[in-house]
Length: 371
Image (cartoon, rainbow, N blue to C red):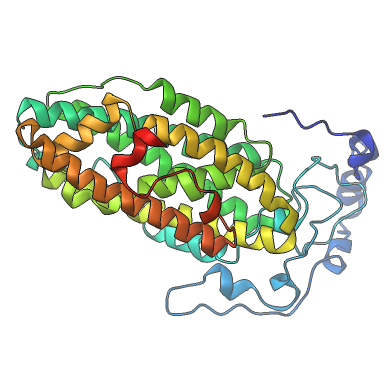
């Protein structure tokens, strides 16, 4: 990812304007006992009252008066001062580079944040680990290999979005708060899949160079929206479809519960990404070609990733119920692939991206080698 260079003129506020010297105010206060209280006349909108709803005091409940106005462009002061506060001229700028609302906004960000906070779970307490029973070696090997792949995937889903958080204008705090919950979700997913690989007598399997290349390309995306397309539309969307089919993949109730809980988290991430791209493409239709280019590359890597033994064979063994039912597993995996492609294209449609004529992913898993 290219380093963002912050020019001096971008720093609307300057550290030099803040005088670091002994406080004449405190000296006067202690000598006279008279407070200044000038700050009482410097504030945002006064007299508004937020009222909690049935679910408590949510973000939407405090979007009242001027506090509920999300600017199309973030504050020029570019500081950490909260949206709606009185801003002195001398506040120092942090040089935010994502200052247009369309660059990061999604109308569902606040609601997704509230949902994420309400539905946090613990991989230590909420997974019935004591019910995990020994599995045949082929199923345990397959599950551990899948968990190794999913651990790789979950690392990037936490690291990549948070790289952009510090670049976002603080006026878009709802997005930043949501992305913080995504990082927590993905940390928990990394945690739970690593635990599963080690909890039942197996262990971590083989890392995939192609998966790593795909993740690196997400990390190196030239813009937040380009990353969103690669990560949320395709990458996390692909994983979400897998988790939805967890009952066919999971060899135990423990595994089913893991997939179920991870699925509810991933659906929030994919929902944010889809809505963000819809807002961005509506505001900047010319961005579509950049997104298409990113997805051309991402789809090409996914095709190759889905054609290596360490991903194809574990899935077939799990879905078939063992290596003796490998053919059945491949048939079920073909059905899963169709769902993956279909749901991915539906997300593109929802985002306003006409991807179907350009998509590189064949609908039929059996045609992967011809793609």
